[in-house]
Length: 178
Length: 458
Image (cartoon, rainbow over all chains, first blue to last red; front, side, top):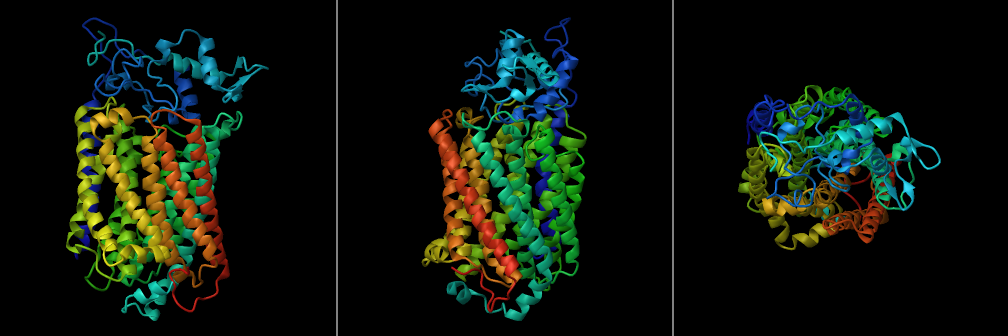
């Protein structure tokens, strides 16, 4: 390897090739993807996000929730996500087309949230979950006021709206509901 | 450390060494000093984050929420410690090997300054207003360009030193270091564009992010560490590497395959199947360079009492642990890329354990070893405390192994005992890093010239 140019160009090519193959390739395939109905004449899915949920995503991001929570359901052959009740169908790329930042996550210290909005019954439950009470201590009490942390701040309300908006329980052309 | 003196190459006469080292002094000490400060800060943040995972952990405070601490600690370790330290050591190594006398060292110093300022800004921003979505790219959008320019000023000197070397001769260690530097700059700029400035469509962001993380980790950090490994194994043992004719194959396969391993961290995710499969294949292919690097380095260490000589040299004791850990973590990564294995390991603490092996036991230990050899030569003063070196070795070694064990033991589910083991191990890492920091700053402040260019005293 006496030739300096060989070495530098070779290293640049070795770095760029996977980028071209994987990232540009994925972008070419997924770039045109938009909302679509599961069957002709059906509603366009995924649904538009409520404005409060868009604000709530910023709260989710700023608190680093993604370091412990994923938002993806793997297909039936790959792990026990569906058998474990995380969702009725696997997540598909189309589910994320409206999201400016995709929060797939890669660590489940806490539960997966891809279908949190479909699981949860009421706002009180969401706020209890956001507080993360462990042995009597509320880890996220700073989002609330009141003696028992029962009064949510604007940020907590937005975060709750975001969490309630998380659902992939509609049929998708790539992943029909059985 | 008489052994290393004996093993010094005959062609490396004192006058030469100091003429190469003298102009390095300013930028090297600035970069390495700041690296050590980041290392201690990062370890302290990791310790607080480990506390947060215990039920009795700190109460409710937004600035110390786990996600923020984890992100700040990761950036401090990756860019602050490993980044700065590799700027200094890669420049030092390539100056040595290429007989390069740096003329515009102030440019490296300015680069280092801006790198650190951008990192301080990022750390404060992560703690106060929160991290972004993507690990290792979670700093304010404005900090990205500053970091890229700072890297170009501080991190590309090995390339200059390689281009200007007077002889046509080259050595495997140089290839790794030069390629690591140019790969990182390209990867960082492309990642900034496709993840931060003009984000790719939907989940293609996740593909771009995984590619950046693997490239930065395996090519820049891992590649640089292997380059240092190639140099020190051959230098301290004072003999050619085993099957050295395969080194160029090891180098090219390592750099060609590493980036393709990226989507192995997305198996089962809603990204195209062919992307996932490329990651599986890439991870398996990485076993080729792992085998060849192992043949070169571990082969040399296994001949004629190489391991015991490595144990008796401060530099090579750290570096041989580092090389073994890097190779082992890549074998684990290939195993975990198997779809059925991955189904059980994905989203668990497995990736943390593998990352600890790669970064704390692998890259970090290699950097420590190289620093034990380089710092006395550049600063002109010896390491003041042998006890601190021993404390540092054992605390970092046991801390890294303990952290990895704690992570692997919790794959099946969180356990209080193992979380506590993880906490103690993180504490050990901090203790070792404090011993190293104390020793480093004592060396820097002493400033008395050493009679011989000892790599370290033991």
